[in-house]
Amino acid sequence: MKLDYARLDPELAAALEQMPLSFGGITRENVHTIREVLAAQRPPPVATDVSVEQQSVPTPDGEVAAYIYHRNPSSPQPALLWIHGGGYIVGSAEDDRARIIAENLDCTVVSVDYRMAPEHPFPAGPEDCYAALLWMVERAQALKIDASRLAIGGASAGAGMAAGVALMNRDRGGPALALQLLMYPMIDNLHDTPSGQYTNHPVWDQGTSFSAWEMYLDGTPGLDASPYAAASRATDLSGLPPAYICVGTEDLFRDEDIEYARRLIDAGVPCELAVFPGMYHGGDMFVPQARISRRLNANFLSALSHGLGLS
Image (cartoon, rainbow, N blue to C red):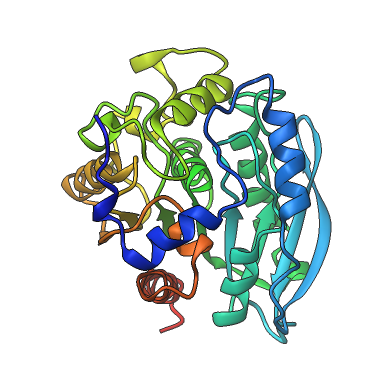
């Protein structure tokens, strides 16, 4: 099946021809080249008054880096564990969205540089993120954060990992979480939905996604994939923290995200769902000045502010 590009938001559609990199055809053989190209094309950080500090987080498998974004708090403030996107195989913890969140909200954002596939398939990444969550609680005083007001979140694969870590945290009796912020999460390794059948989604298409899942899961376990890797595989969603989920109507992940929101609600988990017309995957980051992108950003910031008790 082919997606009709006439359904895309005009401002977002116009930007597709200008995108310097297509993720189409990403494989184990070229993923390192893709990373190098992305690193070379990464724009300079957004100018803000947010300070950034790098620290090391101990994990059972060694240390990983974390970037702490804040506006020099004078007293403990709420905190967000941020997990960057990139299909579980590319991306960087030096993430502009983490910086933007810290700039717009009175909270500290800890962005973790988790290990990525294919060199480090599941469960390496989620275990790193869970260790970072525990580290935030243990180091709350030094980090000047309020450990009673913690959220976890991410975009795309980062949101998928956040959903998996939220399940892991529930099952391990970890710290209470005020919110799981899931921006167009990558949560279903099967894409067995109507939106998942289109093969030509912009930016992140079906073939690319299946390839990324194979690298992350180190194979194709299908329905037997761990729910900590693919949250859609979870059979019990009760007892999870409140959730915010957003996705675009023209995103490969649209229907799996809507279904996950429905299941959370059915399980008694407070969940806000926002579906943005004409939005393709990551369109808000590629074209941040578009009106639909500004709506999405205002919406998720409002949800996070409310979840952390800031508004």
